[in-house]
Amino acid sequence: MYCKKKEPCQLDARIIRKDNEVRYVTYRAELTTDKDGKAVKMVGSIQDITDKKKAEVNLKESENRNRALLSALPDIIFILNIDGTYLHCQVSDRSTLLLPPHELVGRNVKELFAPELAAQFLAKFRAAHDDNTIQTLEYSISIDGEEMYFEARIVKYKARQVFAVIRDITKTKKSELEARESEKRFYKAFHISPIPITISHIENGELLEVNDRFLQLVNMPREEVIGSSAIDLGFWADDGDRNAFISELKREGRVNGFDGRLRTRDNGIRDVILSAELISIDNKNCILLMIFDISERKQAENALISLTEELTASNHELRQFAYITSHNLRAPVVNIDTLLQFIDKENLNASGNAEVLDKIEISVDQLKSTLNDIIQLVAVKDNRYEPDEKIYFEEVFDIVTTNLASQIASSGAELNFDFQEKYIMFKKPLLESIVQNLVSNAVKYKSDKPLHIDVRTYNKGEYICMSVKDNGKGIDLTLYKDRLFGMYQRFHEDTEGKGLGLYIIKSQIESMGGEIEAESEPNVGSVFNVYFKVHKDKN
Image 1: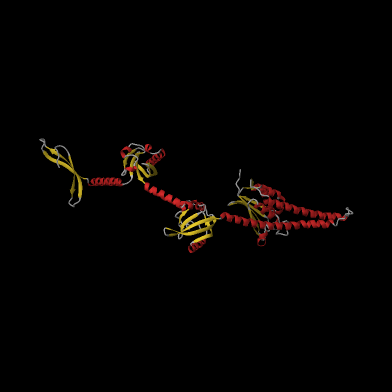
Image 2: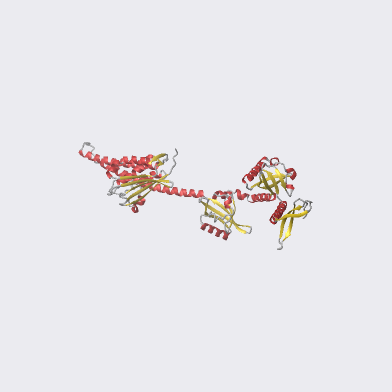
């Protein structure tokens, strides 16, 4: 170590310790002289800089590795300002650049690319810088007349600068495009077919390909279907159907006209006819399946069956109605005809004529009553109403209890109301008729016990329920359940009545899309639950 007079000196050196470990040190020293300038002594220090030296070596090695790695990468590397100005460029293959690197630096993306693509780049630069996230962008440009495809990955480099790695994906992209075109040609008929078609593995049901009509049928997106199993997706409504279908397919190699049921995403069931053939793909047995949706045809068939059943029931009801009404009409007519023969036509003032006329009057009243019943029954069956009135239950029950005030008072009935649902959309005259029939029946068929009538309204799914409960005589439903809502059905001979009330109530409710149910037990009482279809208030 050589030091000039009066000047500090420094030296970095490598030393080997006694244990053979190599350490790096820095020597610092200063020469002290006498008044004649002769060296008297040297004062110095030794600092261990091994850690610092190793860090510098590691950093240099890392820089060399990164530099070598970047040089070896086929990617184009840019450093840009977030305004789109190129600050640095590194590229191994200059044929992928629009301009040589030295001409590119200082230019802006807005000068080099179409406005739409330049705007996309600037948006990605800003997002990568401001959000400190990785941004990607795929784009294509024409270089020397050839369309080339690139993928850009952009990250924040430092303040107002971004680091962009551009990869040439032309070969991959063109391979994808060629494969897609090939697939398009191969599956053209498959995909444009109006019939739902699938290709799947026979063993595990994995769906390899489906057409759009199939996706529409099951109401599912392609990405959720392709690669999934038809078994796991639950397309088969009945596992037994699939087992029978697969067995026949394996045995025969094809299946034609197999009746099955398909489950859609919303758990809807579609009636289908299946035809399939075994095909081989990559040496694996697969199913080419064609599906014919016959749900509408099935619905039409079921509707026809329902209509037939309804017409049969209506015809039976009409016969019953005709028989009963003809009987009820015939009896008073025969009476009148017979009584007319007893009138003394020669002497109209004869004393016996008055008695005969009184009896004729009774028969005429019976005839009027029967005709009024017929008019009322025909009106109930013919009329179809729209639920366009907002009717409050409390208001209707006030009207009915006022109309029946004397009957209620004489029966000593106690009425209790719990209107959880305040109103319905209905027809007021119909609701008044229904309520009046139910309340008057409860009063009419009271037992010896103090009469209690409990009325409650509440919501039950798509219906509003009105429950009318009493503790009267009740009805033996084990005997009369099937006749309960029939015409001219009476269940208490000791009480006057025609047996039309419940029939009329049921017809009125069903004409508005509702239902009625009854629970009853002799000497306990009855509960009539009327279910009104919920209709929105159009106002």
